[in-house]
Amino acid sequence: MNNPTIGFWGVMRSLDMALCELCNRANRRRELGRFFALISRLGDGVFWYSLMALLPLLYGWQALWHSIQMGLTGGLCLVVYKQLKARTSRPRPYLSSEAIFRTVPPLDKYSFPSGHTLHAVAFTLLLFAWYPLLAWWVLPFTLLVALSRLVLGLHYPSDVLAGALLGAVIAWLSLTLVLIMG
Image 1 (cartoon, rainbow, N blue to C red):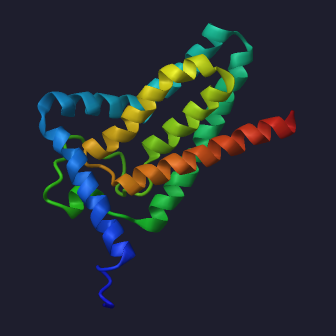
Image 2 (spheres, rainbow, N blue to C red; image 1 turned 180 degrees about the vertical axis):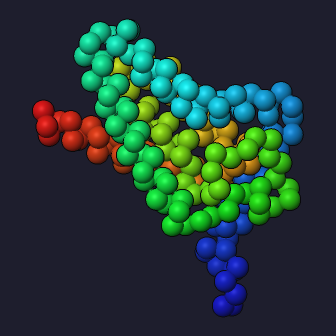
């Protein structure tokens, strides 16, 4: 009864790995693996930095401030996720299970939390606040970025969920700070 692999946390770890392995099966299909590798690469920052550069062209000079806020928010996201990765040192799923098939190299050594998801959620929520119609186009990309982390075997579902929650909190803090500063 006192076995640490049994009980709530043991069940949660097992469920996390089972969901990770299930999602990773899509990576064995060459076309899907390539698609999610492309999504992941765009989620590295290419898509977001391009969008930040385009906002002032699409929406005028006011959007420059929104791009700057996105950049500063992204910087905070980077600090938070780097600190958490260094403190938790959670191995990536492909290192923990031979059933996980990895096709792309990770950007860093550890798994928790998903930085791609953290940034994608934070940026998407900022866009929802400023440009709701544009955000509806970005939301599917954000969901695909989060899914890509699982399909590619680079993160557990709990890493992606934690990244999404942290991204939401950081976006909320960023928007609140702008409202306070007025």
